[in-house]
Image (cartoon, rainbow, N blue to C red):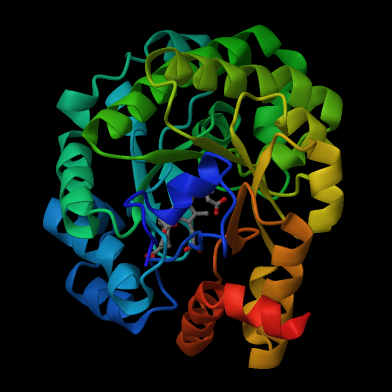
Length: 354
Ligand code: CP3
């Protein structure tokens, strides 16, 4: 239970309250490692159907909620979902991820992008978020999410996921003015989209700059950080009380720069020790994450020890327990269940362990 107050754990942690245990949720907690998800995927084979038909997307978002009662329930969607609303053609291919065809590579294509009108192009998002809030009430917190400008630009320019990011880096390092225009347009659209999610019921918004860790620190400062700041500033201007989380994958070299983004909470990956992340980010910054998704392939004793280790290092204020990145599709479902159960008993387990 959330104790004497009706405010759910995740929001209390985001406010910096001292808690007996951290709130817990998992990135990608709805998805292929769950049998219920795989069954539903047979009925709705297209990702866009699963995420854009409100009843189906609500059902998928609630699958982990019913199975594990996480402290956060995240909207089932994808970071590329708003792109068609800007005039960028998108699909999500089975096993491959987003496909953008044609990719955005010319000035004329950048000029032709439309401002986002979420009521027109994303009406299903409002329906889904309203239904999720209704369903979880004060027992959990509903999270919305968006992709960050650099990461969405990477998909738009490359046309698909990439290992090297050579096309977008080619643009960044030979035609920077064009890329800056694209990043600016994406930032304004993402801010509009994040506000729309909050107005529709999202209580926290996480921004994924998944591929910004592929940039050197100086290029991160030029092509990622200013646009993260632009999104967060615009959202804070109208919605100052909604906590904002920033995730960058492979972020060890840019952690301090992430701290300057304007996010309230930094999602930390497992290349950094949590105690070190705390030191580098300073006492005011809240933190999330840090546990290697690979830990969930370990024994139960190992999973428990890593959870308790992370909680000890993060302390009892301003920490949201999570993996350092998404749960992997082949994770045993019972280990995911064990992760949530253990996290929720952490207050008792920590007393026993000291
Ligand atoms: O966390 C949640 O439960 C919400 C679901 C969610 C999805 N995508 C569903 C999805 C979230 C938060 C995302 C965000 C997302 N999408 C990111 C940022 C997070 C991160 O991992 O860094 C990125 C980079 C994408 C782009 C994308 N979409 C990828 C790389 C893939 C996976 C390709 C693959 O098949 O491995 C997708 C497709 C996708 N989005 C899946 C899911 C569950 C898998 C396809 C499926 O289930 O059919």
